Image 1: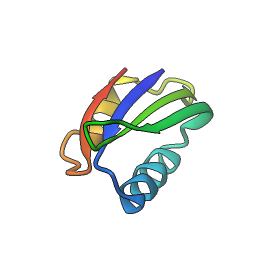
Image 2: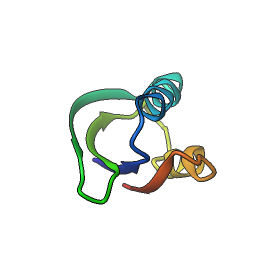
Image 3: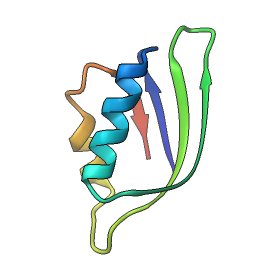
Length: 72
C-alpha cells in the first residue's frame, strides 16, 4: 500500500498517475479524499513489477513539488 498526500489540484493527480504508470506499477485499488488540511489524501493498493524495489517509488517522487508526503 502507498499513502500519498498531494497538493489539491487535478494537474497534480494527473502527473502522479502518469509517473506511476510509466513505471509499470499496476493500481489495483485506491481511495481518494480531500482533507481538511487542503490536500488530497490517497491510499493506493498496487502491484509492482517483478524485481522492482519498493524504495524506488520513494526516490521517484522525492523531488516532486506536488507531493506533500508519501509512505510505503
